[in-house]
Image (cartoon, rainbow, N blue to C red; front, side, top):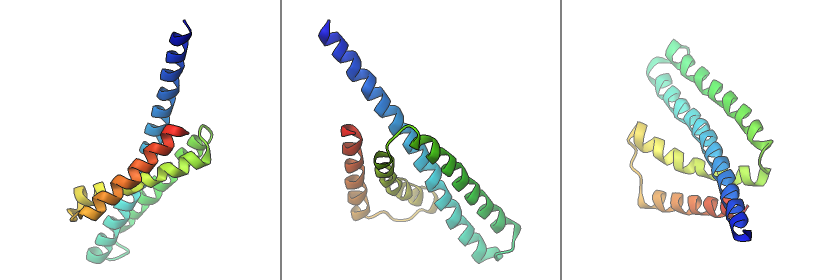
Length: 130
């Protein structure tokens, strides 16, 4: 009976960690998409000028995404310690590399991959023991 209670507690604790980690990753995805939009805005600025409707619209979307991120960040901080939440921001590096390859067809070097793996490993270890 004692072992069964310990097992339930272990499952419950890991579910909570998984839910928090997923919520933080959704926030990181939202935040990293603002960087994608800002890069798109810079390309649009180069082609169309700053005062074009396309450039201003893209910049507006980037700012809106940052606003959404700010609200999500405040919500997550009510559930998680700041040290844990801030550590998970390191995963933005992964999303940045991912978006660079996906949207902009940038070349990803072995050093980019190794650095990203190192950061992700550190993030997983911190989340596991917090």
